[in-house]
Image 1 (cartoon, helix red, strand yellow):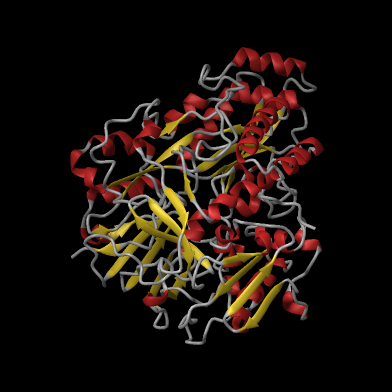
Image 2 (cartoon, one colour):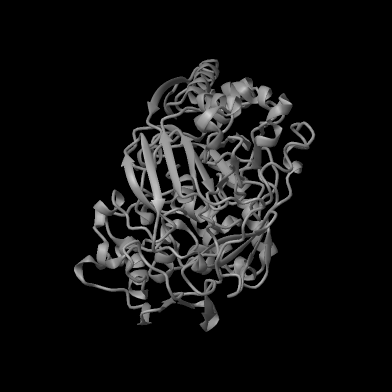
Length: 596
């Protein structure tokens, strides 16, 4: 039986949730142009105060009706171009658990629920394929969804409740090792892969019921008032039962969204064309204003930045989903008045960590020595300086309920690193001259960051063996239990802005494709996580999460907190409706259009 509880989120089903401003790195409404062009030059102390927190609430059945609310000045038609570094690792929605790929899937994948932009920095969880955000009963254990009339696959066949049931059941199959765990755990148990092997051998989950073609009923083991938030995740996007090709579906998905994949040259380009069977009247979320999308991959940040600064030819109709202004161009972009109306800025809601692999770096004194010596200021300078980030000292991001400020390792007092304290700890360790295998994303910026880390650690007697790794398969490689690394970067965003979607996941089960990248297996931490999940009082739970945050860093030190970043992006002058989504921290395709 699942013991995962989120009573602190019970208010989400009936009330409003306001996020505090965040400043953390992630794999990046109101106009994106507003709030940045006229804002004062930021500093380390006021950077997070430049942006109002987004408001998120649960919408009604009327909110769930299409079409989407149009952005001001919208123009329909034409082709929009998108350039970024990496192609998408998974086209099967069930294998998606990163914000960049999830953002792309808005173009081709629909789920039962989703986030609708209803105003400046204001969002509602609404029915996407469903007529509303769900009807809850049995004290929160039972959720019922009714599919809208006229929702179809790209071949014109109807999307049915059988497709929904199948889509949830296939997530238990052995070949799906990525994706969110929530619904599966709530239906079965925490280690859900042991409870059920998927529908391909003819076995079904009895607690997902389909009384007719348009109704699907989830019967959870325990109350979950936040199920409509969980089902808004791309990992719970719907797959057609009749067209499911198991592993092969990752290459040839069937669209339920406004576009279909017309051509795809792996790691080079992708072209999207309109899905003739997508009806905007059924879709409250996606505007789908361009007729076509042309996406190109393989571009580093400097090249992208220079193209947007020049703003010539077809680049005027071009934007990037997640490529930030290159660090070496930050000051130029911020100071050039001619660029201000094309700047997009948004604080990140993500946690940014340099994880230790506790299976390999077992001595806490070594881990703490590295934390004390960490070259925080040097990394900040390399990645853009205090104009684009602030120093973080905690596991939780400031946007997450339960966050409290503390600084165990003196990152703010000694941003250049406390070498004396680090040497003292190493002398007390079992190996005063250890070797650390450090894996890093093989990009120009991360190459420079790695040099800074390597040089800093050499000052205290630690040898860093730097291992460059492919950016596209980063999470797949580091997500393996036997990944061969001692330390590596990892980012995490709360699936909802509460610590209950952080600690139980990043310190949860250790398995291939899992998200406990530090491989922390501490019975006391696990017991405390479960205790806090069971607390009925929100304030009490938040205080307990904050205390656990600090205790983990003081006694175990499974990671070094990274910088909290504020995204800075440019776009072409003829791209309208571009804005960095405050929930996903990438530019949403839902409001994009091409100006004449």
